[in-house]
Picture (cartoon, rainbow, N blue to C red):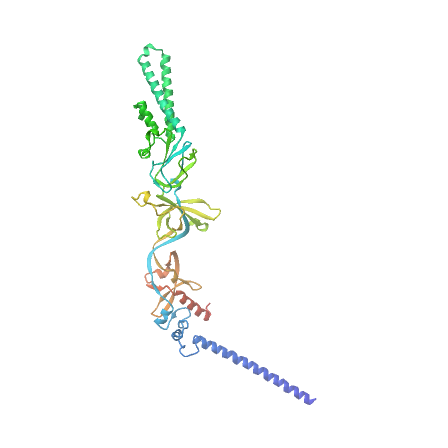
Amino acid sequence: MAQRAQSRRRISWSAIAASVSSWLLSIVTTAALAAVGWFGHATHWTFGLAGHDSPAGHAAHGGAVEPAEAVKPGSRVSFESREAVERTGIELVEVVERPVVTELLANGVVRYDERHTAQLSARASGSIWKVEKHLGDTVRKGEVLLIVESSEVGRLKAEFLNSLVAFEAKREQLAILEEVQSAVMGRQLREAKAALREARNHLINDEQALVNLGFEISTAAFADLEDDARAERIRLLGLDESILAGVHREGVTSNLMPLRAPFDGVVIGRDAVVGEVVEAGRPIFELADVSTMWVVLSVSKEDAAKVAIGQPVRFRPDGSTDEFLSRIAWISTEVNEETRTLEVRAEIENRPPGVAAAEVTTLRANTFGSGRIEIARRGTAVVVPRSSVQWDGSRWVVFVPTGETAFEPRPVQRGVEDGEFVEILGDFAADARPTHVVGTGSHVLKSQIMLERMEAGEL
C-alpha cells in the first residue's frame, strides 16, 4: 500500500511539471511572435535582408515603393528621395481661379422645327401634269413644286369669265337707264340696280374660288382686256415662263393649277409621279425650313426641378466636334410614360448670318447627341482637379507639398463641380492658400495615411 501511494505521488508531480512546461512554452512563443511583429512593422517587413533595408532599396529590387514612416500617424507622408516620389507617379497641379459652371447632362435628338414643317397637297382633284421639285431640293417661297391638271379648275376659270361679262352687262344696262330715267319707270331702275349687285356678288364669289385654289387673281387685271386677251390670261394663270419653256403654249389647257411652296425650305418628302391621279387634301410634298432646328433633351425626373426656361444649353451631335449654343425655350408639362424623363426643347440657329438655307448642312434631323444644361454659375472660384480631392474617411482633403519629398493632407470643403474641376471653399480658398496640390497620385497618399491611422488604432 505504501509503495502504491508513493507511485501515485510521483505521477502527480510529473503531470504538474509537464503542465508548467507547456504553459512556459506558450508564453515564450507568444512573446517571440510579438517581437517578430514589432520588428517587421519597424522594418516594413524587410527583416534586414541585403538591399532591402529601406523603401528605396526595396524599390530597386522590383518591390512597390512604400512611403517612409510619418512623424504622426496620418499627418504627413514622406519619401526617401525625389526618385521615390517620381516612381509613385505623383504629379503636382496648380491651384487656379476660374469661373465655375454647374451643368446637367442629358441625351438629346435633333428634330425639324414643327412650326416650319408642312405637308402640302393639291386643293382640287386631278392628275399630275408636271413635277418641278424633287426630294432634297431647296426651294424659295412661291416656287412651283408641281402642276395638277384638274377639270374643276377649268370650270371655275370659265365661271369667273362669265361672271365678269354678266357684271359688265348689268353695269352698262344700269348706266343706260340712269341716262333716261325720266322716261322709264322707277321699278325698272330699281331692278337694274339689284341685278347689278347680284352680278357683282357672283363675280366676287368666282374670284374668291380661284384664290382659294392658290391663284393670284383680281378683277381689275381683266377689266380693260378684250375677250381673247382675257381667255389667254385666264388659261395660263399661275404658270411662270420657266414652266412654259419647251411647252407648246397653244396646247396648254386652262385646267392647270400650280402647287407652290409657302416658305423657304428643303423638300424632305415627295410622293408624286407624272400622270398619277391625286385627291384633294392628300399629302404630296413635305417641306421643312432647316434654318432653325429643334434639339429635344431628355432630363431625368430627379433633375426636373433644376431646369428652367432661358437656361443656356450646349449641344454636341454624336460623332462631331462642333458644339451648338442655345437656351431652353420649352419644358414639357408631363413626364414621358415610357422613358420616365422630362422633355425640354432648345432652338438652334442652323444658318449663320448671311448664309442661305441652301448652304445649311450642319445639323440634321434625327441626329442623336448630348446636351449640357447650365443650372448654376459662380463668378470666380478657387478650383482644383477632381482627382486632387480625396475622402480620408471623415473629411475631404487635398495633399500639399511641404518639401521635395513630403506631403501633408489639408482639409477642404467641396463646392460645385465643373467638368473635371471642383470648387474649393473655406480656409483653403483664402489668400494664404498653396499654389500647388497633388493631382495624379493623391489616392496613393490617402491610402498611406489611412493605413497609418489603422495601425495606430485611430480608425
